[in-house]
Image (tube, rainbow, N blue to C red; front, top):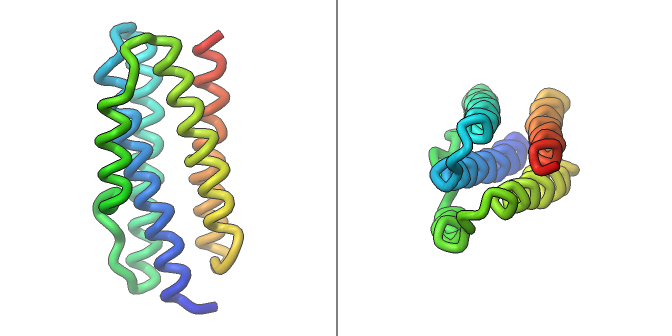
Length: 142
């Protein structure tokens, strides 16, 4: 197992996690319903905890964890903020799409390969958090 490959894979997942934190921040800024805001804030706290765990794992492997979403993530974040609707249902749908497309599908694809068992378990926990959040968001939408 190539430790440098594992570190890079985990850093890519970490950058995506930072994108998720930023996206949730955008949603929170647009929402007015206090209960929805609280739900989004709780999700954001869990995503931040995942970021911390990923950063610690990268450090334990001897790597340097990413500290933001990266250049392409930053551009994506800017566009997301500009394009995000003020409509509550559309905000929820956008958040669901983000959790499912990036938090679950892209992340699962990313971590299929070259991870040691401990890193693979951590990546699975990160993906499972996104999966849970997508379910919660769907319940909030209906």
